[in-house]
Image (cartoon, rainbow, N blue to C red; front, side, top):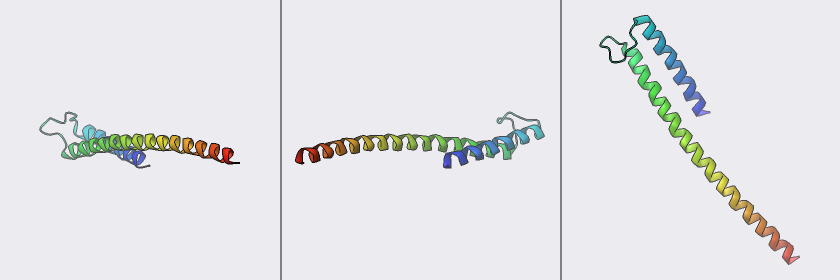
Length: 88
């Protein structure tokens, strides 16, 4: 959910940047008269993209851990079932 919210926020910022660039007629961030608002919004959008990538790495790591734990649980359950059948 957080990644989706960050994506939405980044898209909103990109729309604001495009509006500012269109309004000023300057699209080069290195131009001396480039909109300071657009420059700041671009930095925020870039920061959101970095955060999204970091969250994706964390999500992938967590999903891998869950899969590994599920495999261990399945093995332990199979061993327990086998032991119960052998005792009966």
